Length: 346
Ligand code: 1HN
Image (cartoon, rainbow, N blue to C red; front, side):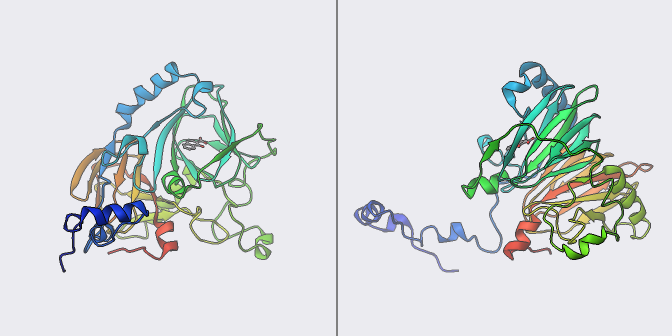
């Protein structure tokens, strides 16, 4: 590879003349923009312990009334980036949100896409486009771009969920904004995960004439996903990933535009290697405990812990229990990479 010229080889007067015209020469910066062989990454493999964070989140519930927070969230900040940038990875924002009984988080909509993965507590709900979606531990709730959403809590005790958004991407596109609105009118009856989309392989008949609905299913109950993983495990050899993708049931495609979601089961004592991919990700432990090796960094994980996976990282996951399965929820930006034609797996 040829050595390229540097800035200090150029006359100061010349650089100044360019600068006055809002110009720079490319060649001193070219290798930085296009590192040779593989990308340079600021994002680090990282681990957040839920047991450690939980008391601080509960303290936020004492320190800051919901009216003063709107969304009472502690944000995960990847140590390789500035904390103000609120990045888990270059495309993924994530935080832990607390709602206490009787509290509400007001109605709004925004251009970034969001999902919630319930960590603990019962009786919470999110209303999206007039549909009241129950939130039970492990459930995944989608709030797609520009859809009204608000949260409430009708149970006892705190409810905590993990928010994941494509905020960093949409913010850097200078396309991030929100609008506040009055509380939604709720359509009575159960949500469509309990009515229209109960079983894979069968759809409401009318779907045959509506092939491309954007977000037909907004709630993926954990009990259904867990049962599906347990059943799948009987058909997959040990050491091969037992992994399910959350999809739009009418198209079979990823259920959100930028971020992808999947659930992985590790059988007792099992070790699984996930291939290197161009996509970055966030792992969230739903049940169990074990170890992770992410790009050479090792972490012990417990229930509800979260881990950042930089782009192009090999990931080895091991279930350290010899009697209980472990389950992880994975957020990644693979849908974006696929749309951009840059997705790689090797
Ligand atoms: C948001 O809308 C929620 O609706 C939570 O619960 C966290 C972080 C950044 C931007 C929007 C919510 C958020 C957010």
